[in-house]
Image 1 (cartoon, helix red, strand yellow):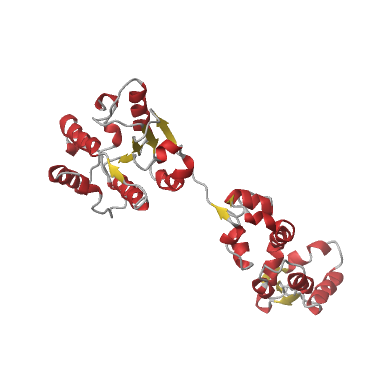
Image 2: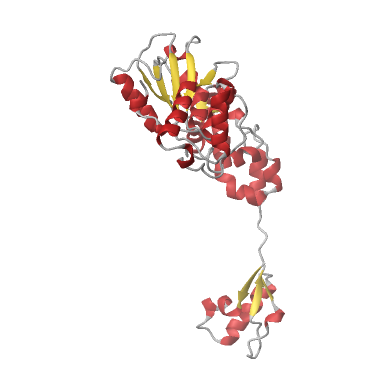
Length: 330
């Protein structure tokens, strides 16, 4: 119940005589719409009225909604939840009815897989309804799963540059945009190799974005990139996050394709840092990085290089990928 003042209750009757205001308040009390809050005291007039009241919420008649749930909805929709929560059904009714109508009129479309946003618009006329709005809750309340709707998630398409379509070839995934642009420029200007190795295709990883976009690798790329004889390499920042991205990428591709770190690039980063600025002057590791990395990354390096990388990380420093530029790729 909500509290309301006498002044607010009689606002619509403020131009009428007090005795009529008094009768109006008594009528509201007799109808069970308000209840005096005796602790508020009286208004000092005769006859007296209390200064504050409880607003009594009126019971609604949900019989029509109950009938609708029982007899009008598509039989694939479970109505148990909403029969027990009729007030919630009243709020969700328009969306539940659209889902029911879709199943009645267009259920055959579920035979074809569609993206989340496509199916969402097809059913509710709102492309974000299923992914970001109430769609998942509506489905759950109706006893349906997302799998029932035969939908799939989409990822950002891979951005890549192919210098050649020959197979087999080496593919290089790059964490950051600047390095991707510089290496692409190097290849376009006639540089045949990068750090002593030939690469046919450069892939822009966009940090952790590669973990999403690589899920659809076989759908996003041309056949020559999918060739099983190709080598796939990774090069990113020398910090916990960069190593973590590599290890996550390697794990999710285990059994399908092998992804290995481009050891020559990391070794060149360390040598250049030692030669130019000194490791003690490198930037500090960004806060809140997940430091739970495994051993897989380090297994591709000799003990000397591994020791240097571990000491660098333990000192709270990191080497950004951008320490290397086009003059270092030869």
